[in-house]
Amino acid sequence: MWRSFIPNAFSMGNLTFGFFSIVIASRATGHNSENFYFFISAGLCIMIAAIFDGLDGPLARLFKSQSQLGEQLDSLADLTTFGLAPGFLMYKLYLYEIVIAKATLGTPWDIPVGMAIAAIFPLCAAFRLARFNVAHDPGSFVGLPSPVAGLLIAFIPIYNNNTQYISRPVAIVIFVSVAFLMISNIKYTKPQSGLRRQFTILRAIGFIAIISLLIYRFNLYFVVFGVVILYVASGLFAMVIHISQKLRYKITSGE
Image (cartoon, rainbow, N blue to C red; front, side, top):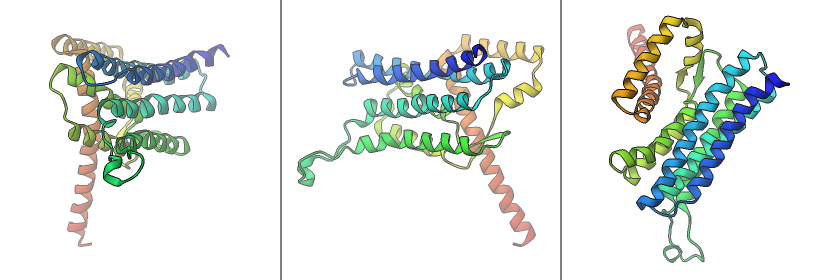
């Protein structure tokens, strides 16, 4: 039991910080500078949870304690941290003001359109995780992994704080697009599988040196953000190549 406790504790850590993110975001009441630190803290909680999520699987393999219980626990934690928490963060940051006023409709209450938009993200994350649990390719992911999607949304308040504020229409387009990437059929590689097959001490030292140099030159947040963006783009780029190859084959074969 002690072997399974260690990876399961990391899954619980993932879930805990996802819950922290929701609670912290709920304390923000507007877009002033004082409340904006709540949004940044909520995003940081999602990032910390992603670290726990990235370690529970390797620890389970290290201690040879993989189990169906651990897999289900990991999925439930991911739904909370990378589905519910990003959706609620975006709701408090951008979407809570989007309503159709009762005076316009002649109804006794406002229609919370922003709430419905915010729900798209956890719905897509739930479908993505359920599909993965039922059937998945051992060599690749079908659809954008929910942790990557959650990290993209978690970076938005940090980006707003360090550069310029993302407008609401642009933020909504990003939010909905990332959500639908999770349930798409676009294939993404599993970096951990390739790393395990090609791991050497020299490569590990080189990788750490490059990442350390980038963090020193730029900023930890933006280095991680750049890696996430490159990963998302890799799946889209591979899809474009695949479609172009199929079209070229049909043209050359006369179909």
